Length: 163
Image (cartoon, rainbow, N blue to C red):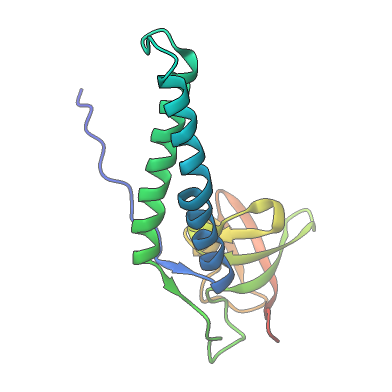
């Protein structure tokens, strides 16, 4: 048996203006505030002496590595992203940035916004266009029935934030 795993599918490069601004703000915060504070903390811990048994130094270095990793990721990802600001011409169909209301078989309704994978947050109703439900809803019109993750949904309404 092989340990080979095929590479993961590349996430969609689309993002809303608000999502892009939030990622930029996170990058600025990490680079201008958090990283310098961590560097200072590690330097102070290193000055205490033996680094091999210095928990503050070891933990500080770990935090610094994680922060540097996130900074590199955000820097690369921001260069790849395409900000979608225009509304589609056909606003009756589900496209990126649409607010959709769906109903399951039990009659329970949910409202979601289709956004890029970098700004997905189910607690505020933002789902990725790459998610099973997001892919099933794309290009559909109100009244359509879709199946995602072995569950049937009916698309009740489609709207856009600026309407």
